[in-house]
Amino acid sequence: PVPLDQLSRLRFSAATAAFQIEGARTEDGRGTSIWDTFVDTPERVIDGSTADPSADSYHRWREDVALAADLGLDRYRFSISWVRVQPDGRGGANSLGLDYYSRLVDDLLEAGVTPFPTLYHWDLPTTLEADGGWLARDTAFRFAEYTQLVADRLGDRVEHWYTLNEPAMTTLQGYAVGELAPGRFLLFDALPTVHHQLLAHGLATDVLRRAGAESVGLTNNHTHVLAADDSPECAAAVHAYDLLHNRIYADPVLLGAYPDLTALGSPELPIEDGDLALIAQRPDFYGINFYNPTTIGPPPADSPIPFDLLPTPGVPVTGFGEDWPIMPETLTALLLDFDRRYGEALPPMIIGENGASFPEPETAGRVEDADRISYLDGHLRAVAAAMADGARVDEYTVWSLIDNFEWADGYTQRFGLAHVDFTTGERTPKASYDWYRALIAQARA
Ligand code: FCB
Image (cartoon, rainbow, N blue to C red):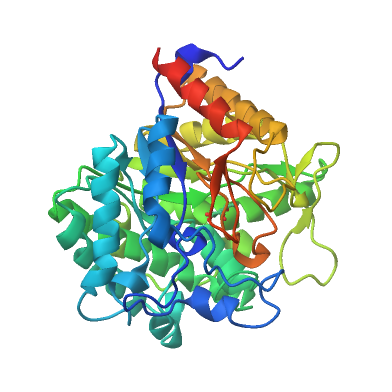
């Protein structure tokens, strides 16, 4: 069993994201985001689905709140859709869009669950993408403006905020290799998006603190990098990948400087005076979304990138197959690496997402998801082990509260603690929901 003495020190949460659960893409004055463009482009999403209605949370949010409350969650991590609030990515607020989040916040508070929203979970207004998206410095300032609109409306009741979700995935999968929106293939020319996202985080942190926020941070996708062999070439490739996936985001936020990027060909980042001070305002927490380790080998001859992504041999995998190997001990290693690398500069860590998909039935009904329980149990133990070794982790978040639209994988990957029938919208708690509920109750006892 998980050592409960460590777990009693954690808060427990579960997460969702606006575009993945809400549906209602054309209601109440919502504008369009890069994800609308992506799902409306043939061949982009594996099953041709469009995220509408998905779990239909725009209409069924009360059921989500009830699921969160019955679980005994301390907080619920949801995201706010920029284009519901500010349909064109500029200008005044669309009050109908804000009304939705205001109701959600009220209902959560009434149910005893603390709202913990994310301001940006990948749904950039298409108008801003047309002007360069995250390649453009102006996008960071537009994000701060949008943040102000949200804070003006929700800041009287919301005290804890995530600015950005996974800037690493936006840069790598969105702009470098094009697997996620906006689907651009720029390889290393995508790197300015790192700086502009971090600048957006810094500017928004300022806005939220001025509005009286109690805690502000961001959450990034991080991976523990494994070497495929013990050659010096492999060590160099591991170093390059660690820079690209982990350190280029975490170092500026936590240390106020980018790491030495020689191994990535010394790219020029569009840094202006004062940017790093904004980016490095000490966050109140540092969010880590963790799913799997990454095995890296030396690059094949003539490769445009300084590493090779390889399968991790000999371990079980999730519904994504060999792309998502299951190795909970690598989460312990990652948390301890963060603790050692950043030391005093590291605020309490939050596991902002952790979870897994497995093949599951589409129609409503009880799902006995033993694989998910074992994945979550293993990773919670891994967190407890890191805490026992001195890492400070304050919160653990399951991805996801409910089944939802898994980006380019459409409805083919289910991550929920509760099953969703995407035809009827019906929610049914899975065995993992009951397991998590019992675990939270035990940790509190
Ligand atoms: C993360 C995303 C989240 C979800 C999980 C499975 O990278 O932040 O929205 O899709 O992966």
